[in-house]
Length: 518
Ligand code: ADP
Ligand code: MG
Image (cartoon, rainbow, N blue to C red; front, top):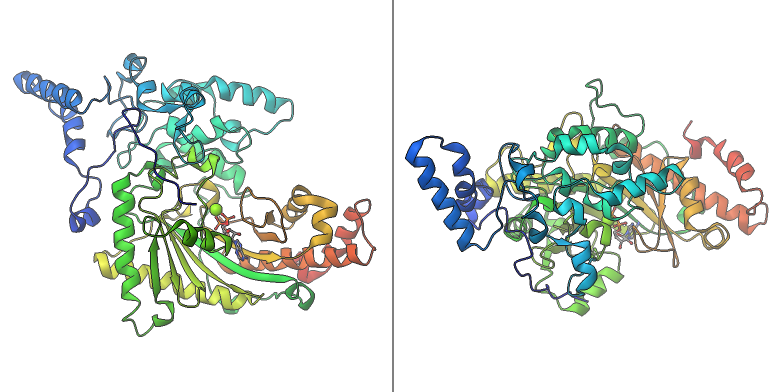
């Protein structure tokens, strides 16, 4: 079902960026009149000019119905850390954000879509909620990677810093893991520079997630999407169980903020730009097989949307943890899905990252899916360059690889998966146990409808690593994971294995080189 955007009153933060005409927007989406009014007092420092400027700023705040201090608002743009920020907290921030306690009292705030802040973080204060997660973590309960890294000392050191592009703050960055104890990563970037400016949080989180990768300057991420380098293949028994194969990569445009730090305007500008890029495939000699139709969420009927979700083509939105990062704000505006005619090339626009470029098809021909993906990424990059006239369009970094909103996707930003029917192990072991096994072979398992869903009729098995490995080697991880699940299913069906001897049987299966990759 389509969600009608809820009316947003004065509780919501003012947009970071104003609307600009479309060509200019593509060139400088962050430069706005509003931004310059807020920044002016910090730029001009003498006599009468200061007085006049302050009066202008106060008038502006009065007219826009804003709070007393923009400098300390977790999501307002500002170029420098503000030394005054902590003095003016108490009278502003909680009125800028919908907080968890406000949302608990008023059902019009939907935690599945709206940005709802931890009460303390909304005031730019250390969150008591996180202290209690950390205490429980000592007794064995879940704590996000963010929760494992963040301390009150680090919070106080970073709390008044804002990034230039999106005005991203540490309070916004850590909201998901603070509100949701079971969030695995627990923090998000609002723009590419967040990873540098808040590196004292992000770098340890990245090193904890991407085990073995070091951000001490000794490692560089390398990309290689050559399908001919694949040396392992799905076994016939595994292929027979595979419903469909899909590989996606995330990409973000380096001239917009990442979506958690973006606005409705930036989301719409990105969707408008993509519409032109998709149109360009129609006239292309090289990419005409990729031509198709762009469907915007605001133009689809609820039935059309649901049909695409049910067919595993379209994202659902409606995820509390993602909503807490700001992913789903302004839903459904600026969102869309592009499908080529055969529905084998799909692009999600503004789900979380700006783009999710997806290659998928029925059956288990993973090499074909990977080959198409490799072309599709090139087509998208060339298309954006052509439409914008820019030389570089996707955000990336030599050490972090492709830049994404969630640290888990950095690097290749790639997740290659098969949907595999393994009903016997699914009921004997369950998703959590299958996922645990998958992790030992650098894979992960998800439910039938993706992340945070349950197994209905199929398991989603995919590569787990993303950073510090080439794309083709991660596709090989996926292939090995699917072969392993298939072989284990066969052992359970033939009753050679059951829950009591599963570890032993797994060890035997792993001695097969095409599974273990030795
Ligand atoms: P991601 O964010 O990595 O793209 P999600 O777990 O959010 O993946 O799932 C997104 C959608 O893609 C879901 O509808 C899911 O069922 C679908 N999907 C994932 N893998 C496959 C696959 N191999 N075949 C078909 N659909 C898939
Ligand atoms: Mg997802």
